[in-house]
Image (cartoon, rainbow, N blue to C red; front, top):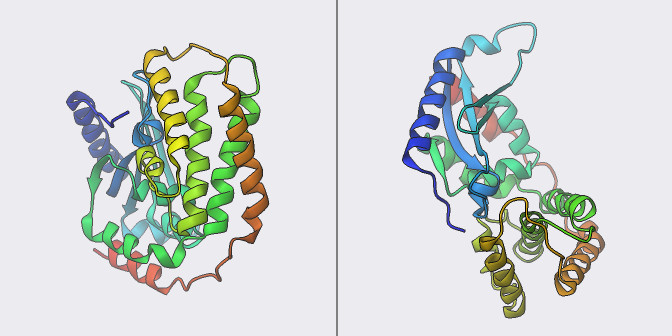
Length: 261
């Protein structure tokens, strides 16, 4: 389940990002792989989910109507591009958006303004919201369980779409920090026991032999574990401390510094 991006795909993504900059007149500050390829359990035919943060020119902000703050494109070779404008990004960062924190932890980075991301990572502890993040991951696991894991035959990839967010909940419960993006780091955390690691290793071995469309019965021990974890985090989620909003002045300053360049 290692993260591999073949050189021709990397070159195509680099070209696509350069094309976004030329077409839209923006600067890409950060671009990463998201989703199953970043997590470490993609199928060979999984899309490349490229997510990026970009800064328009100052003139973009100086207009009466607020323009669209997202750039999206679906390209050949299953490359899915989606980017957020800088002010939108910083607003979401201030609110503790869990998806943005995941992007900051992606192990596959296609483009990076190191000074910009260093500032975000330095500020991250102020803006991370444990309760909000836990309910984000819990919602993902709950939806996957309800829609994909209750039938007699399940796709093993969908099991990991429930396992990973539940282990992210476990991380938040114990560390109160943003969970790692890579699945392997979640599995190796000290609060995951040997029995759980053995269960996950069996699932990984089975997945490595299965085709994308293959279905198999979900073993009772896995189903029981998933149901117990869902119930646990439903119960404790509200007890996580909710922090007061952090001041946005550091983010205002960062916005001005980037846009004024």
